[in-house]
Image (tube, rainbow, N blue to C red; front, side, top):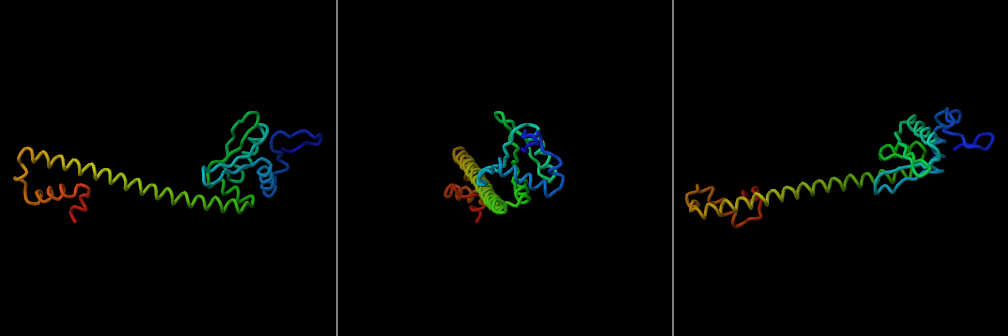
Length: 180
């Protein structure tokens, strides 16, 4: 916070100090340096500024809103945390206060996360497809076995009989692979 002329802590953010845009950014930069923390971007995205007093926390939130960054306040054992969870907003704030290296690290972490998420999504889709295919093959084998037991297999049309033979020979193949 800021001290008044008598050495006492000023409640909230002094408006006369942050009246100009350049002063606003300098004030926010100072708050970040004094009580700020940015989590390792390889994990969850999280930036917070620890402050004393609810009025000051809300004032800092308002100041961040004025520069287009949405922050929230959380009470913590006698103090408050002004925090941001959005990677885009953390990046925007760090750009505005000139923390270029931190911005580069966040951009890199976001790119890595995007690639990992895409790979995971594709692997999960492929696994789901294989699971469905295996389930369908097991069901087909059970139906073929039932046809055998009822003595109906010989009455099948030629194309279906060929399919049954292929399914029994290659139970792990998908329908597409059996067709080829």
